[in-house]
Each structure stands twice: as C-alpha cells, then as structure tokens.
Length: 407
Image 1 (tube, rainbow, N blue to C red):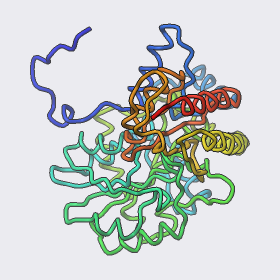
Image 2 (spheres, helix red, strand yellow):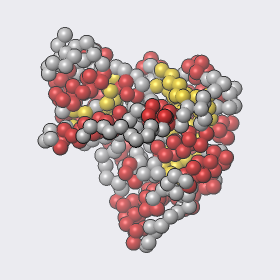
Image 3 (cartoon, rainbow, N blue to C red):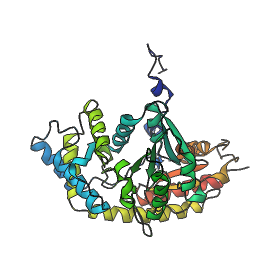
Image 4 (cartoon, one colour):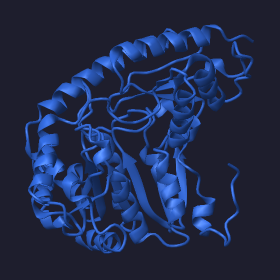
C-alpha cells in the first residue's frame, strides 16, 4: 500500500525523526519468514529465555486477586520499595522509595526525563556507538543530539577529553550506557570517576545513566554506575534500570529509576497525562522478579558469557571480520571493514556495512544490524540471545558468506 500524505503537516520534530533501524530489520525478517524463508535473527536485543516461572505465577495471581485497576502514577508502593532496596543493596545508593518512579519500560523512563527537561536549543551528549533511540528521542523533544565518536581504540568508551570538548553552554544532558548496546563495553569505576571530574566543573549538565544491562557483566569486569562512584553527582543523575534484560521480561514493559526529586516529580507529572502509569499486572510481576530468588539472573549470565566466547571465536574465523570480546550485554560488535569494497556471491557490491547486513539477510538468511545505525561503521551488531545450535549455524553461514565474496 502506498503512503498517503497527511491532511495536515506532522509535528515538525516527529517528521524529522527516523524510524528505529532495529525495528526496520525486524520487519524485514518478519516479511521473509511470512514468505517461507528460514531466517536466523541476530538482530533483536532481547533474551531468548522464558520469563521465570515464579514471575509468571505472580502475574496470574495478581489477575485472580483483582489487581487490574489503576495504580499510583509513579508506580505501586510495594514495587517502588523493592526498587529502592535494589538501588540500596546492589548499588550502594541511599535511595528512598519516594525517590523512585516506575514507567512502561526503560524507554519511557528515558523519554520522560528528556521530555520533562529539554527545550529548543538544548544539547544532549551521546557517545557513539549508541542505542538507536537516544538521538531520535532528543530530536522528538526539539533538542539537538551531539554525538561524540568513541572508536575501538578507546574501547568504544567516552574519554574525559572528548567529553570536555563536547560540552557547551547549551549542554543539558550526558547519556551513558554501561554495559553498552551495541558494543557491550563496560565502564569501570575509575573511568566513571574520570568523567565525573569533568562533570563536576559543569554543574548545569545532568547525567542519564542507562543501566539496563547491569546484570550482564562477565568475568573480569565489575559493574559501576555514576551516582554510586561519585555521590556529588547524585543530585543531578537519573539512574535508569528495569526488568527486561535481567529477567527476560521485555514484553512486560517495566522500567524504573531513581534521581533528584524535582526531576522525578516532573516525570510523574508528564506520565500522569501520558499513560497514567505502568500496567498493574506487570508491576506485580516486576515485584516478584526483584524480591524473589535471583538464581535465574546468575544462570543466564553464565549462558550469555559462554555464548559470547563461542560467537566471537566463530566471527574471528570469518574472512574480513574482526571482533573483540565484549565485557557485558549480549552483543558482539564486529568490524566488517575487510568486506567493504568486495562483492557478494549474489552480486551485491558491499560498499557499506548496511550492504553487508542486507546481503547477509538475503543470501545467508542471517539477520544482523549494521553498526552505522548505531553511529559507527563499518561494524555489525550481532545479538547472541539465541540457542547454541542456532548461533553455531549462524556463524557458519556468516563465515561461508564472507569467504564467497570477491574483489
């Protein structure tokens, strides 16, 4: 069906925003599967495990108990108390339940914070590579995303020098994501402290710490978050987390945060006119996840670490690819520079990393994401949130594809 022009112009900020590159790839995969193709999808950023049984049962019990009505806009108190305990016990942050908010997914936490604080002309510093939604959220709020290249030479991490150079009188936020989507990079406490030294000299800059992959940190690395390592920044840091990655609850749509009271109140005011709060049943499920046994988190982290090692090894065997072992999350970020300028067996010129990703989909039946969609090419983001057999099959298909390219 062809697109139909709107009767009236769209909101100018929405019109200038781009659709999610990740969801565009997911749509391509769905179309090919509907046509009968057998695609191995390594493009979606969600665990392949089922939500823990005790969490499922808590949701069922909540339905049967009649907990199907509105909750408080900022979330029901028992869940907010559990969120506060999580920040206190796991992150060493003296958080009260009143200084928390629950939203419909971590994405809404971030958007609410930006929408509540940004005005025309404001700037948000975003280290690149970045999660695809950060710049578009800033755009939707009428502000400007200032992307700062963070090359492989720096471990795909922001340096104090690069941060200092990016700050202007219009800078309103710095967004940090550790472990990172798409690279899996993890900031150490020392690296965060070095960034904090720069930020302490700029009291007008807020910090948004996206910690959604907190529990997916592998052997040899330790998780740290900004407000934990530098309490002097706690009064202007929003620390966001959620249950989607750690507890395989992406579809339940529960994110949460802690931060300064003035910001949380503004976010609650916005949410009250927007969604009225998160789903009541999902909140009861999230409470069970946070308050219940944590063996699921430990076990799945071990599985992801094993998968990381296997996938990285498989990718490094492929002609034209190079991939370092990430310290966290469930993504491999592989350079495909060695394929650029070559031609696939199907006749496609591989001029960009997007060409490589599309050729892999069409010719190898493997879906990956081009790194340029995350602000840095030529790379491929490969999500290893899939069973071992499928990952092995995908790596073999990628290797065969690479070896069949020609000059």
